[in-house]
Image 1: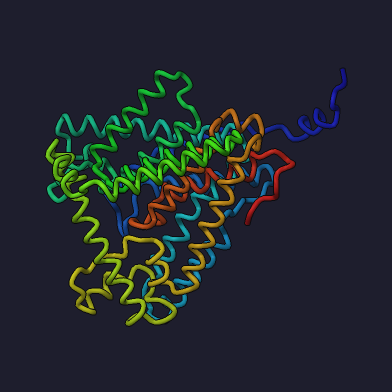
Image 2: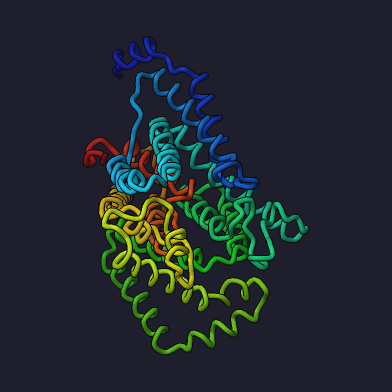
Length: 427
């Protein structure tokens, strides 16, 4: 038996600062637990999660400096392009500076979680706190619905019976619960199977009461993608191809053979929840199509080449007397219209970076044992990342705080969780 004396000496000379780790663990838990607490809002749409992020960043810097670690800045190239693309029109028009500051601020979610993820214990706390927060939030929202507590349910006249919890917006809430659902399954947490599936059931019921068609479409796509990635990871290539082909065949046949409008009409009569979610699918598609047509026309006919400026789409639509003035509700169109080609390149760079990281952590036998115990099914984390990118087609998810937190979790796993022989990390 041999003893690695150099490791023992190094540990004695540099003992782990337990107080700093405890503070970091508290900051992670507090920040992630605060993510849903967006009502009431403060000035400039600030909220409790922003205070949680400030605390998290301060503790992260303290934790890293105590160990002489450098902070990790994943997606820095993409974020640099996104901000630069917005800064050019903002400088010219004199508007949009606050939006740029908010972009940089939410980016610190990714920086903090990617940096703290160097410690497996802190990484585990981040993942498990997120799962607990999502499940607890779903339970509280359902209590609010059935007990008639508007603050917890988040229901209001404008949304009908759709519930938004403390996010104040059903689509925002559904995206958070969906992220929690995929993290729960990726982490297999809670460990006991019965409790785990009970939590899955609670989150699915909460998603139903959110009434977000986009969330259920994302759930379907993410589930299929997760199954496909699992087959590929296990080198069951034939099964993966058959799965993908079968799904495409069923989707195509359904589109051709089924009277969608009649089916939606029948389903919408099942309950008030179905009426306010599935029942408005056709009208939602029509309104989004109209917004897309308007924004595309503005890009070709009215917008300068460098973009309108951050968050100026609605104001410009009103100035042009467009018939249906709305925000872009699409990350990709918004980037091109408001930030020009540079901003659009930034979004594409971000999506490429996410795709590469997701692929790396999902590879067969890619993770270190201590990280694989935390995320036994990383392909489901990759699937949720894909769902978030897909959701950007009908929501501006890059404004969601938890989206950048998810990107930070993925970056932490890719940077610190992979075995040494794996390819180098991305900028």
